[in-house]
Image (cartoon, rainbow, N blue to C red; front, side, top):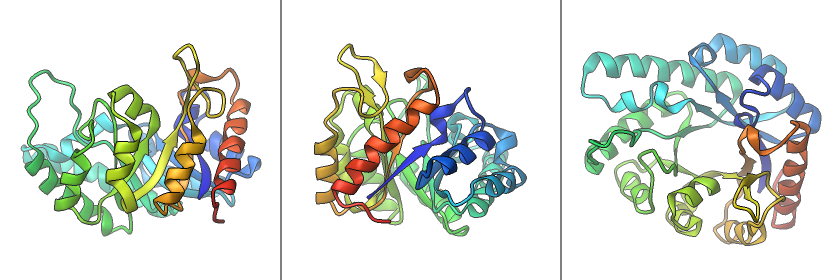
Amino acid sequence: MRAGISTATFFLRLNNEEALPLLAEWGVGDAEVFLTSYSEYHPSFSALLAQKKGALRVHSVHVLNTQFEPQLYAAHPRVKADAYALLEEVMRSAQILGAKYYTFHGVARLKRTFKEDLPRVARQTEEISAFCRKFGVTLAYENVEWAFYNRPGVFRELKAACPALAGVLDIKQARISGYDWRDYLEEMGPSLAHVHVSDLASDGKMCLAGRGTFDFDELFRRLAGAGFDGPVIVESYSTDYASPAEVRGAYEFIAEKAERYGAKK
């Protein structure tokens, strides 16, 4: 296992072109690059990031979900075509950065009129996954309370129609959804690409990993038991700390756990 940091942790504090050199300076092993808007999806921006990241490994890319991911499932051909055009930009950016995974939310469950059609979404997810694979990138569905994978069982259905699909376990989203993170981990199993971690203080507020009450030893034991050898990535909200320098402590806390439970370089 390895430790990493998502640039989403610095949202509204540091831009990506500032965050990546800082992570490289800290000696961080892996990063997830959170591309925050349309201008950042363009490959020219990722070319700039590639120049600034140094020896830092970019494990995955992430985007602002609602800007185009739900539209990849649209019935209207023009809407879907425009969404795929943006997806292609993101895939070319992933190639430039060397990212092998695309952290994905997909359909948003935001309207009260939303009706789940899991078989249709599963078929279309395979289309999206096949498109990503053409660029050497694996689609990785994340458990998110307000998005399509909002409960255990959804990933298993998607995986049946999309064998190449990977999973992303988000600890805070499992907590928000009201389901046990262990259930998500069990169904992702060997398909788990990476893990997003944060912590919860005794007063119920989110905080950086290592500052709260979450049992990270159990998490790492279970990850090791599942044969997981990917990155465990610090992904917190920017309101969870006072200074970006504090994020380094959370990374070092996770890195120590990863080493103890079988880190791989």
